[in-house]
Amino acid sequence: MLASKTLLILILTVATVGVAFSQEMVRSPFGFSMQRPKNWTVTDKEYLNQNVKKIDLSEAAIAKILNESNNTLVVMAFLKYDPRTKSGLIPTIQVRLRPNPINDFSVFMTAFVKSLSKMPFEGFHVEGSPKEVSISGHRAVLVNATYTIGTADGQTLPTRSRVYSIPYGKQYFQLTFLDNPKDEDCSAEFDTLVKSIKIGRE
Image (cartoon, rainbow, N blue to C red; front, side, top):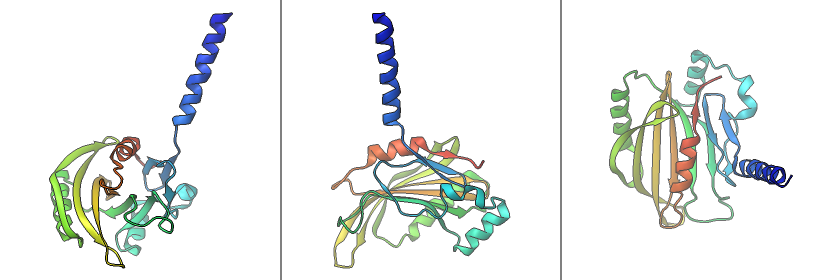
């Protein structure tokens, strides 16, 4: 009897821990899903869960949506804090969908890295070499960079970015993580979120 009670308590404890640590998956109908960062604010909801069944996902329809959005579409975005209540650099996550006319991954990687040289940020510097990584079974490009952002009141905010570029069909997802390690290092949280990413349209 004591053994049975102990087993029941163990099962309930494991179940409770599983619920406590599970987090909501945020899904875009365009084929990108990621665990929602805990206590972060969703800032772009136009193309999230509630619209999955309302969007034509044919290649022609997606190409039209991108064309009407100047070839860049925010499919999800998060802020760690409300800008109205916190000053300085706010850790940010943004996922964009862009057209990809390149079929060869090595050519895509070279073109993407070259495009970063046009970034309009002061002191933009790529840290180390761009890397090929795997995300949800897809080849992806990872680029780490630092730069500064100027504010309206004359401040300069040191910024660190981690950018993943993931080809998918005739488009690619560009996933950008921003933080300032001197004020708030979000590396561990970002690592966990990257591991949660799922790519694929239903």
